[in-house]
Length: 98
Length: 214
Image 1 (tube, rainbow over the protein chains, first blue to last red):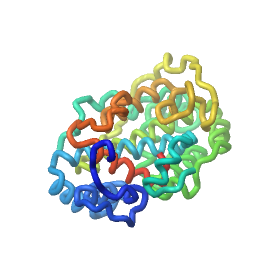
Image 2 (image 1 turned 90 degrees about the horizontal axis):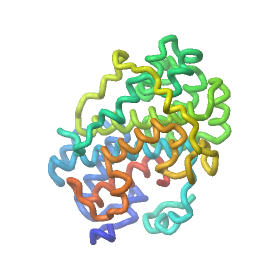
Image 3 (image 1 turned 30 degrees about the vertical axis):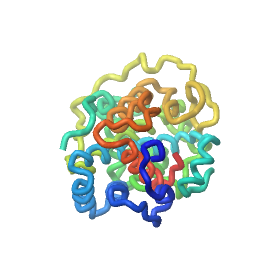
């Protein structure tokens, strides 16, 4: 985000109860939450995402979620350790390292 | 809605509907009577409740940990010992586990993407089975290092499945089709349709929900 010059609350990445401070981020989070949790509100969240970011954003965000559903499972199931180099960013985005 | 990448999903998807490199052989002896259904069953297992699975007990035990959602992934994390026990239980080698992980994980990825855009799921029918690719079982330089499974080089996100070449390739293909290619990962401001930072929000939120630090 910092490289892109995008300003929002980084802690909202690691803490679901922290508001990111901008609507596009809220809608990405809302759609992601609905998709990952198999929520009945997925259609509504998709419509909100399309309304804020445009319809073309939906397949990109969906695919990104899909990719990380894959990666999370691969890494957890194969026991790949988290690199120590990630400790610093963990603090910045509000999650506990290790 | 069209999928975002111009790359076809055919290559990374194909192993989901064909006899697996390892499971095709193992399945004939241990899992189901028809080898060509083995990989399909593994993939479908993610869509089914554990009680209805036709996969063997050892596989069900591991597959139940790769749950469809979220906090379940870490309520009872898979351990190194369980991975080793799994290979023994199915009388195969650890690469069979690697293939199982790859198949299930890629099925989750593709199904999630399709649900996200409101499209029907891919039919993992039996009719597309192909013989196992013997060359994919050639010895690799994979060794057990810091992960539960052998890897070629240090254990990491891009080497986790490297002990099984077909899975390694399929993971990379799908990663590039759904998100970014490995070489694009270092381009922080890349825009392939939407800005990268928006992709990263989705990625980070997914990992938060799955309680996966990565």
